[in-house]
Image (cartoon, rainbow, N blue to C red):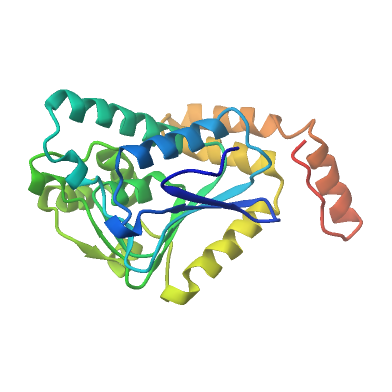
Length: 264
């Protein structure tokens, strides 16, 4: 796994947690072409090999912004063809993030506007600083959300709320995001990363194959009928039965000790 990205800080802890920091603080961590390419490379790689990573935290550099959305300074003067080419790459990036087999959680440390809000909605779940702000402002710029916003936000907050937020483009607070279901927990700014790390480490301490299969069962099952979802769940469940971690979990329970899961 490469860690020397131009626009990302990638830090791996000793307990199988990866912290990915959007690192363009001089531009409010706005997403330019290079950041999109860096995120695409990182998350597409995890679809081939998890590299021993069991949980990922995505956050932003600095205290003011998680991600201000697409870099409009870079986009100023783009031809239609250049715009569409860049956006096609952003679409691949979002699909790679949504398709990542490893649990993804956000630590939303500041403004998450446009693509930053879409990125938040694309993660499995997220915590936010009390000072974080959110908005999908695309309709105020003559476009619309095109990086999963109309789909992932709607699945998080419901159709009627999503229509209101997307069609008005109005900002909303971390507290509102929590009440509506986009954010799982709102914490003080200084407590944000520690709280995210505590949860990520708890996830990483569980059987990694089990966690990944449960994630897929939830996400894919929501796209199916209940009957198909139940059938898919059992297929995911049956994947656990022959694993070494299943044997280890049962042994550890009976021996009254913490299990040592190996992801096998």
